[in-house]
Amino acid sequence: MNAQISYLLNDYIALGAGEFFSPSNVFVERFEPQWINKLPDRPIGVYHDVLPNISVGAQIRGGFPIGPTRADYAFYVSNGPTLNTFDARTAGTLDFNSYTDNNDNKAVGGRVGFLPIPGVEVGYGFETSKPGFQGTSFSRVQALVQSVDLEITRDSDLLKGRINLFAQYAWARVDHAVYDPDGSLGFGPLPLTAKRDGGYAELAYRPTKLEIDFLRNLELIFRWDHLSGAPSGLGDPSETRWTIGLDYWLSPSTVIKAAYEWDKPNGERNRNAMLLQTAMGF
Image 1 (cartoon, one colour):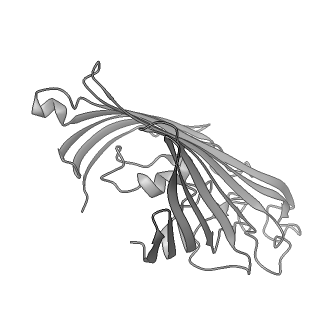
Image 2: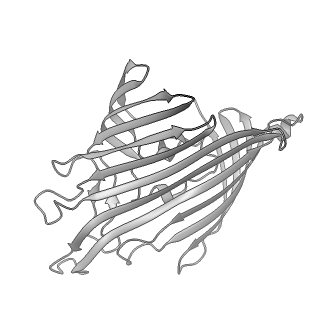
Image 3: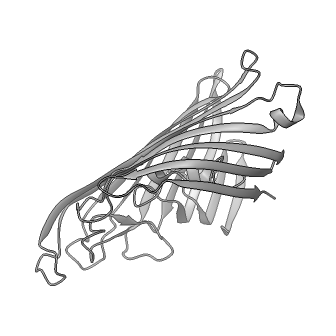
């Protein structure tokens, strides 16, 4: 549950402060709630040290027309992430739990979206920060995360239904640093320019134009998602998943979901699974 206060300055600008879903990660802003997310689990590529999900700080956001098109924006300042330095498995990754500030630096981020035609939006998000603890050799290390996203919604008379395409890909980069430089933690010295990336693409079809109620309430979903391995090479391997799902909508905010997921971490045993979930929004 996020706690924030907002003030609508005018039709194009809104101000906010507190705890909020990070605007640089469009998935958590728009699709995070389980009754909106079309599959029982979340895509791995837009979490796991690659993109922030919750930010604590202040933001400005809004939207405006550009002739027949439209743009929206959101920019924020937050406590920012913490650089993981004490474990070989997570060295160089970012902890986005920003409830406390580990230094005097603030993260700056945002997202800009462009809607060239109705039902189509492309976006770019970013966050830049200095995530190292103050007074350490990591205090000047710079981190940059970036994300591109695409959303398409179309009603098709030919297919007698609605098609949704959601896609997002993100990159995280942390400047070169030496982890455990004196070897006291048992894995160093480990020189590393930490990079990690991940994303997903999801296609959904719901036959909303059919005459049979039962069929109109069904929705078929297919998703690919991917996350690269831990930057140190000593942690989690790269992982790719393929998921197919079938939803039944009892109401616009109540859904029963079933899905099967093929999960293949590199060099490890498969983690294939059957997933079931019921979700309701209020």
